[in-house]
Structure formats: structure tokens, C-alpha cells
Length: 147
Image (tube, rainbow, N blue to C red; front, side, top):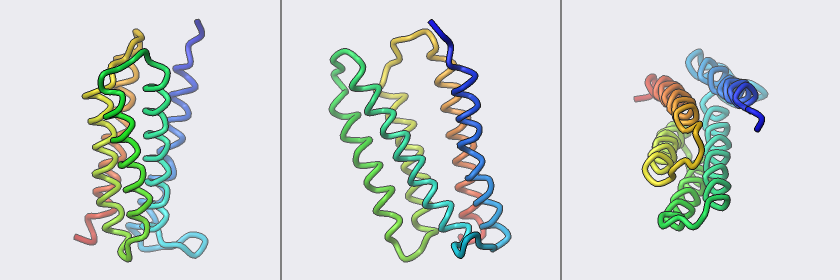
């Protein structure tokens, strides 16, 4: 069986770069393509949460019957929906706060209810934990000047 670890690591690393860029824009109070850094950060954060929720859906569907499968699907759905609804708020700072909660929720739901059937559990968990931690720190950096 082929190992996709190098590709997964590379893509995961590349996926965090827009958060760094938009965090920088937010901290220096600049815009890009006419949108503020915090607005771009919130929009990309909603995209990331949608991807993570979709990944949970895929993993639940691919697993044999899981007693927590329904909870996982519903939790991922509501977290993804809340992420997109948060973009409708007048204040993007509030959106970023909701997205941070969503990011932590998705991680907690996956760790708590979704058991890994393969032997790469520690690699997946370490990568997901590291990326979630880094993204959470970036969320807090974006929120810091506003609160």
C-alpha cells in the first residue's frame, strides 16, 4: 500500500499559508483585493471548517457501522453551517470567534467519537493536532487587537 504521508503533509502545510497571510493583513490593518485581512481570514476559516467537516463525513461513510456515526454527521453538519452563517454577522471579529469554536469542536468531535481503523492513527492525530493548534493561535492573534 502506498503512503500518502508526504503529499498529506505538503498539502496540509500549504493549506495553513493563507491563514498566515490573512493574519498578517489583519494585524497590519491592510486589505487585499479590496477586502480586509479579518474578512479574508474568516472566509478562509469557513472554507477550512467545511473541508474538515467533509473529511469527517467521508471517514464516517467509509467506516463500518459506527454507533456514533449519526452524532458525527450531525455535529459536523451543524459546525459547518454555523461557520458559514457566522460570515453573515456584521462584525467579522465575531465570525472569527465562532470559527475558532468550530475548529476546536471539529477536532474534539473527531478525537472523541471517530476511531481510526488504520495504523497511521498517531500520524493523523499529530498532524491534525498540530494544525488545529497553529490555526487556533492564528485565530487568537487575529482577535487580540479587537478584544
